[in-house]
Amino acid sequence: MPRVAFLGLGIMGAGMAINTLKARHPITVYNRTRAKAKELLEMGAQWADTPREAAEGAEVVISVVADDAASRAVWLEADGAFAGMKPGTIAIECATLSLEWITEWHTEAEMRGFRAIDAPLFGSKQAAATGTLNLYVGAEEAVLEAARPVLQAFSQNIVRLGPPTSGSVYKLINNMMGATQLAALGEAVALAEKAGLNMEAVALAISGGAASSPMVRSKVGNVVKREYDDVHFALRWMHKDLHYAVQLGQQLGVHLPTITTAWQVFEEGVAQGLGDLDCSAQAEVVRRQTAPSS
Image (tube, rainbow, N blue to C red; front, side):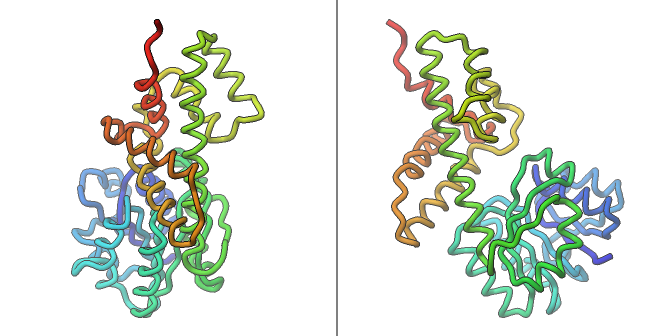
């Protein structure tokens, strides 16, 4: 079994690493705080103090971090993973990143003789915990096939969308669609509340209606009940992804007025202190702007 290094043990990374270890791959883990590695270390994972140390001797190195800056740091800094990897090692970036950075990352990997894959994650923290994530990948076919045995440890479906960067582009498209659905859901619920409708019935109607979707069905209960502490995807990270999506539209010359408006709603949510709550908490932005009943 190839040795695997994991960089980042957040909501998604921890579950992925646990499932990789359960699949009998020896793993080394790095995280900014060692406390998040406690369960993995008790299961037999090895700890590394830096990404470079984690990557030394690994055949596959997987990053699951927050944004462009964090990705750049774990791969390219003096103690970054690239400094510890030998030529031929497979580098896998699972974070949702900008096209500008993921393009640079692939270039840097190729220059150093590494094989690189962008494989953003599709699914919730439950999917990460149960090993049932979906992966939509940007990579050369031969590289993906070499990495497939490791990726299968934490995913149920692996689809190659095209050459390097393709997975990252599609992840931004997917998340911008999900965010606009959440923005519409927040406005719909606020309107129904203001009209005095039976909100339990409204939640059922929305879930089963023609305008529903997996995103809407999974979040309508949170929005109606105003329960946002069980965080599957934080509002601040959805805001970040929308920012990258707007940038992508600008780079490709595609006008994105709906996405830009949704980004502004999430930006206001961050400004209002909702960033660490579940992304469905953006509904509170609309509620707070709704005029009180006369």
